[in-house]
Length: 390
Image 1 (tube, rainbow, N blue to C red):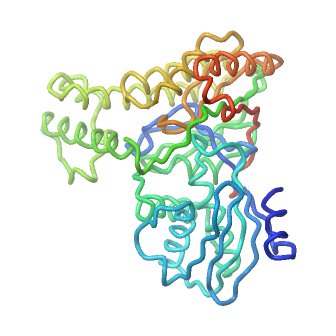
Image 2 (image 1 turned 90 degrees about the horizontal axis):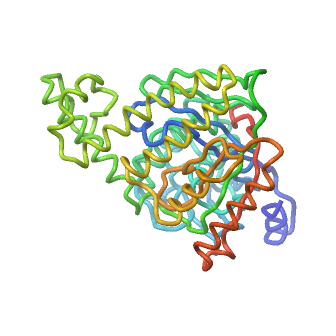
């Protein structure tokens, strides 16, 4: 691993430990987690590697394989808001852990992200792997759910992204060859193994060549639009309302949306329609997965991608083009954005035995459309793995 090599080059010794947090894909349930909806997710065999050793004085020194510069700070220097560099996710992780536990030992280490950054929840992976490492060095036992909640809080409160818990749950709770079917309303979940009757498939991810930053994207704006839609629908229906920042579309009965959607501003109506239809797709997807119907599962994935573009209005020209290429490429059961859709990557379920042919075809057509990105575009075939909590 490059992180181990770089650690040796910097410090002249082997790291004390090397940890790993997988990335995730979420085939169904796009943009519904922060609204209390259902999601399907998997951890995959690419992710964040972290080579590190303890610093008894409680200071932190971090280097990255993917980004330039060495970042140094102490717990007292973290502050309560992001600094704007690549180490913010680590600062946020240390901040949230220290808020709930005593931290006496810091660390020095090198982070390495496999695959280009964007669309596979690399930010959640950095927070989780760093927080677990720091907890381990300080003899702090974190349960799976405490790790999930603290990692989410680090991203919400420190980094400034109003994300739900999809990423963290997938990276912690997932199991190999299964989907995580999670209800983000009450945190109940089921691990659904791949059916023995399932058609064979492989998973591919395609990096568009464009990196992203959720905090500076329209991600938080979409969240505000969903809240406003939910609050308005509850008011029209004469139902009890909370403060708007606490209101979610899951609080709205489907029949209330159907009855009053035409009274909403058009933008709010589109966001709400995406939520209700995507939430239903995630539930139908779990049923299709359970019975081994990969063809139906793939159709639902492609419908999800279409809704993200048309109703939720995420995606950039590059990602939308890649999605359209996947839709018309033979051998793909279904494909969609991998992540929020504001730049980043796409993912696809592919017929087993056709992966090389399919990925080559998608890459060729995409590069033809965006030749300036040829040196940055990459694809990879991945497998599902256990989450860090397993």
